[in-house]
Amino acid sequence: MQLSFRIAALAAVCLLAGVGATTSPTKAELEAFEQFAASPDARIAWSNEIGRIDTDQGRAIVSALVVEDTSGNTGGMRGLRIDLTSGQSRDRVYTSEEHLDRLIDTMQQIAVSVPSHLSGPGGCHGSGEFLLEMRQDVHAFSASECDLGDWAGLAVGPGDIRFTNKGARHFVDLFRAARDELSRQTD
Image (cartoon, rainbow, N blue to C red; front, side, top):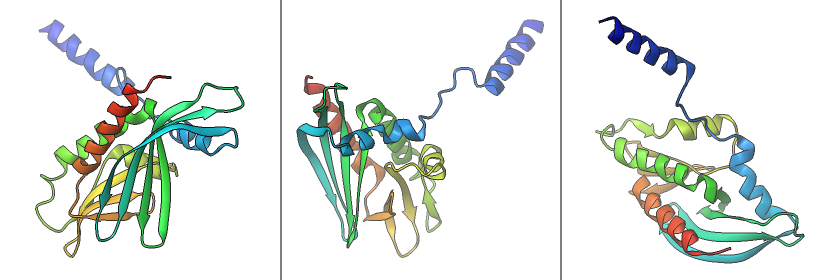
């Protein structure tokens, strides 16, 4: 009995202390690929359009890319670029290969868990990871599945671009394909 109590107490202490918990990447870590790709010494060494998602209100083009540093200071970076368009609104976000699995896992979490909550009009449901990033003003991909009564689909940020009757799983498929394509590329 005492051993069970001690194990339970140790587990509670570990939970409160955050032992075993993962930390979210910082704003600088999440934006590093975008900053690198925009630098004057950066050059796209290889890219491949993985796919598109088009709806009446939004378009996303997902591309895998390898960006080199022409100055020779660093070796380069790999990841994906997502071009988002809605009417006259345009944005481009990047996710480094290092953070790609995290993005896929977060989108998969939305795809699997959110539909059970959407039993009718009730707003948008997403991920705590994306909410934290938005609160830190991170320029990165985020998404929420929505049912607003007169509109249902995926709202993608930044920019709240809407993808009517599409869900997180549509993006998960493209992100996985991009990850697979990057794994086939050699440095």
